[in-house]
Image (tube, rainbow over all chains, first blue to last red; front, side, top):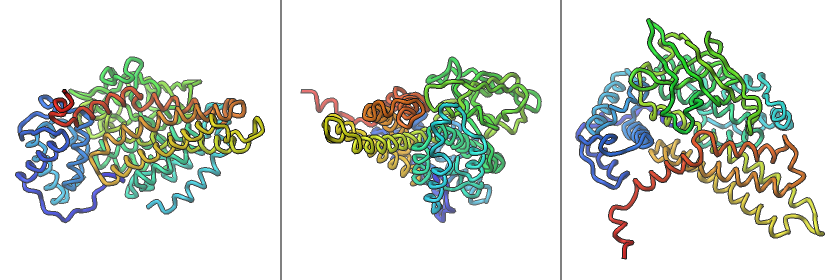
Length: 99
Length: 378
């Protein structure tokens, strides 16, 4: 089954690392450069199909499960916001508040 | 998991083969069969074991779906609806909703998913069904069209407008204000229990709203449909396999003009293209399923591609199979006659071929090489 994560042993990702990795991911997917504050959907013209790709990427890369209300688009609007989401869900997992 | 796939495949063949023509003609699947397969977790094979599911990977679950699709596309459609409902709960629901609902869906309970409305088909943004707070409850009003498996469902996952966005709400089919009317004679998948569902001031506890919060409608729909598209794509692989088997058997056996049909070049071309279609659809589905199983973000586009390619190939392949079998395949209810009608419907549901093409074109353009236009200009 997809998106089922075995408990990962990797440490919490540093926010700066997440930001730069996400910028690389976006650049690779869209073949154009992005800044951490760009609104990907309003200014970047990205589709809901792409939003879903982002969800899957964040889950796989950072061992988190993005469910329910966390799927709201505001969490994916900018690279900064996605980094904050990763941080929060990784912290929740570490604290045993997963799911 | 999935060690028992061969057993499950053999058991499905025993339950279904020989009955599909009659189910197609009467427009009904036996409810005990659906309950039995449901209670074995076979209608939503990818639900994890922790929720009482079979726990198959996308790839193994896809092979099972293809097998059901090769036997009976009506049953495969019911499976697709159940899998899509389960996936929607898994993805959008809270931990409590996942635990409660998924155990029902792997325990014999049957589910359907309601997106389309009379004025909102391909353009789901025109959806008018509303889910609104009233006291400690929510009230659902609207009319849903072409709800696959709606006739059999105990639980209907209804998409509607909610607060500043949209939500999916779990509606028991027997809740006051719910009316389910079976569509009598659909073109294809005639026993899939397509229904029109009317919701008239249906009052439900607040915790029936999946996740409890509003999300953008497009994201909700894209999420739920992803699972449905994989299931339809694999179902089309099944249609192609059944058509290939029927066409090659007939062409090798029947003689006209003093030799087997398969030795006539124009018939041989049909067989070659059917074989190519079956192989292409299988490969594109395998690729998409591997993307799901590895958690690759490419799964999103690979799924749309798999659905589009498989449905197109199934419609072409089924038409060729009818042509090869000719009068031997032209009786309603027969395998290739069913495939011909069922496959056509697959080009329409879960995102029409044209909508899939728009998404694929948008993806292709977004991936263009910067500056490539200059390179081709003389």
